[in-house]
Amino acid sequence: MAIGEICNREVAVAQRETTVLETACLMRQYHAGDLVVVDEIDGRRVPVGIVTDRDIVLEIVAMGLDASVLTAGDIMGLELATVGEDEGIFETMRYMRSRGIRRMPVVDSRNGLVGIVTLDDLLELLTEEMGELVKLIASEKIHETQTRTSLSSV
Image 1: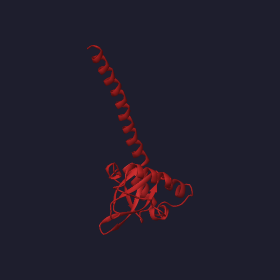
Image 2: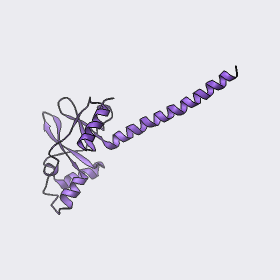
Image 3: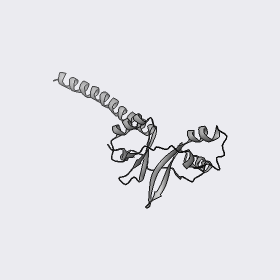
Image 4: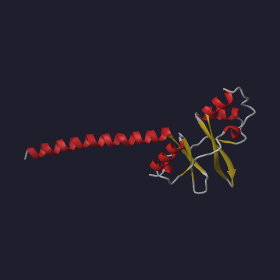
């Protein structure tokens, strides 16, 4: 299954020039712990960074800096990891693990933002799949019991 099939396509975004204060307000409005920072290029939103609530607390609040002056572009990470929407789920998880990241923008073939995938999304998917395997085991036991019962009555 491709990561583009399970990613969240409703992504909260900000521009580089969005102030940190505005960024925090957007996070509150969208109930999000992060915003993808994008540049508009030829009508596409191209991800260039991520700002997390943790970034705001550690880099701005804890340092006593003015959140109304600094921008998302000032505090976003310099290297952004993205994944193509056609990439497999397992490969995406391996890439996230190798980079030590919990969230990653999903992009199309032209690097336009199509969604975001988070560790929580992947855990939810894997939990559902494990639940289906457990149901399969239980179903198999019931089927075997019924088959043996019907054979012994013959």
